[in-house]
Length: 176
Image (cartoon, rainbow, N blue to C red; front, side):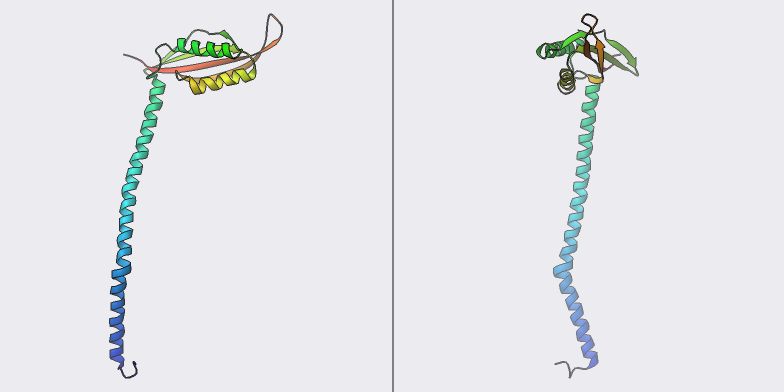
């Protein structure tokens, strides 16, 4: 078929066919692919901005909740009374002995009032551990800052008793 065609015409047909093939492939394949890629990039950029704003918003909300918990916002006005009722109710239902509730230790630092409530409970290890868990999960009036377990000798019976010393801190903003 191309034996009778001169070399110049064959070259021109090849160039014309190549250019026609390029335009057809551009029109039906590459153009759509590039448009889709640019749309995907713009959507990713928009969703990326939205995700950053959403994550920033979630972080700020978490920070706000943490700060409110630290400042005692929404907490009870009398932390000591709430603590006493919670712990005494738990001790009476779980065969523990609420031995002592010393006074509240108060510190003022950088415009904040830090109240430390401590109490001593005697009983079995499992009961004290469950009390520890209940305070951390259910009591929302402060932060359980320290727990110390001690094995003490009972003065009356001479028998050893396990004691748990719990310290609960509540941070409030100092009112000016």
